[in-house]
Amino acid sequence: MEAKQTVHIAPLLDDMKIGRYHIGIFILCFVTLFLDGMDFAAVLVAAPAILRDWQLEPKVMGTIFGAGNLGLLIGAVAFGKLGDVYGRRIGIIAGVLTYSLPALATAFADSYEHLLALRFLTCIGIGGVLPNIVTLLTEGAPKRVRGSSVMLALIGYALGPAAVGGLAAFLIPRTGWPSVFLVVGIAGTLLGILLYFVLPESIRYLALKKPQSEELRQALRRIAPDLAIAPQTQFVLGDTSQKKLVLADLFRDRLATITPLLWAVFFVETLTFMTLVSWVPILLQRSGVSPAMASLAFAYGAVGGVIAQLLLSRFIDSFGWLTTLFATIVAVGALFALGMPDLTPTVVISLIVVAMSFATSAHNSLYSLVGPFYPTAIRGNGVGLASGAARVAAIIGPVVGGLLVSQLSLSGMGIAMAIPYIATAILCLVFYALRTRPAPGVNERAHA
Image (tube, rainbow, N blue to C red; front, side, top):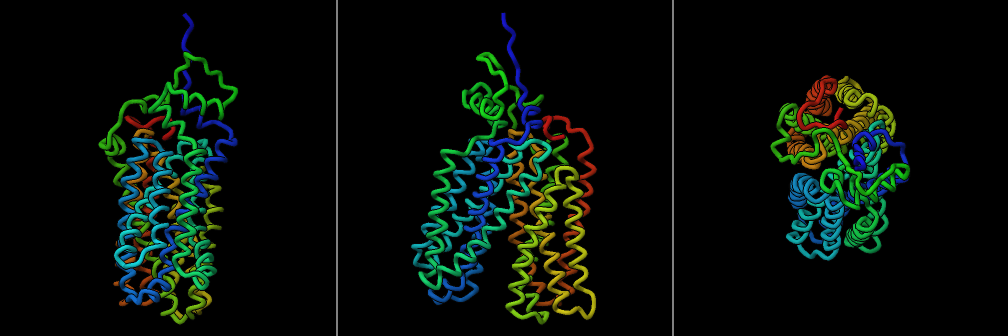
């Protein structure tokens, strides 16, 4: 009797050379995150025109933003679970359509209540896309570029708000604010249709859920044409990851420590990041910087964030948590430096740009590090719940920042915003120490 050939999927994918398969997935994920960012910022850039046209008080938009943040939290948790049950591909497509169709409907909203409900639904989709994108990239990329592929793809999310800002500046004076939602809604819907036909499923997920399927065989033939696959060939994902796992496994064995620590680092880091990006323009104006320069400083910080991500992505796979630690320390130093006496407006702006740039890169680097901690069966849940912790902080941080802004000077706010980053730096050191320990129990080979 002919012996059955066994193909071990995890080492095969870990050691592969980068090819068209990897580049194709990266481009699709980058574009998806780009439109994700556009949809997220659409209501922000349209808010002044909405208030003017409907003659609403500015505080009304605060309720709409709050509903959006709640939607982001629900989406991150719910769609992470969806990706584990039905696949990363389905999770991404469902998320894209969930944020695109309500965004399209927003163009026809005629009341505050309609806008509130549609923003909530839109943000459920926006929050749901990210965990599945991170999971798909983590599972598909070779081990040596796993972190950098996630970090580089997240640049798409950073560029989305910049693009929709330019789009709004062109469209709103000519055709009104609904046109912004019409464009992003149509673009997202078309993307969802495109992804249905061209986005491949994670090979690790297929090996876990459908190990003998023709879909898995075809995927392996595309990425490894030299691999001999016979009808009797068996596919194995990893030594222990093939068993059925449940949500409780997020807190079993080594993960009983790692999961709460991941939630903690996502929470405390996002407290600083979201407070910083939410209140910097107002803080700059209060420190004597003109409104125009405050807006430019915010834009420079966003561009600096992209540059910092490009630079740090070269080190994330080699140094892991030390890369996040470095970005955090630089941001903390810039925030503390705001407390120095007799700073000129130019120096203040420079420090804010440095703080924003490295805070952005630290924030996005976390998503490149979380996925490998979890086995394939619960990776979507793991990433989604960690992202959910960040979304909770995104709700709390700006609110607390608003209370502090009325009581503290720029230097005081700099110190207040730096405190959660000190905790972030400590947790980065903890994770760097944990990575050297063996991963027993449910962790598969790829976690090392």
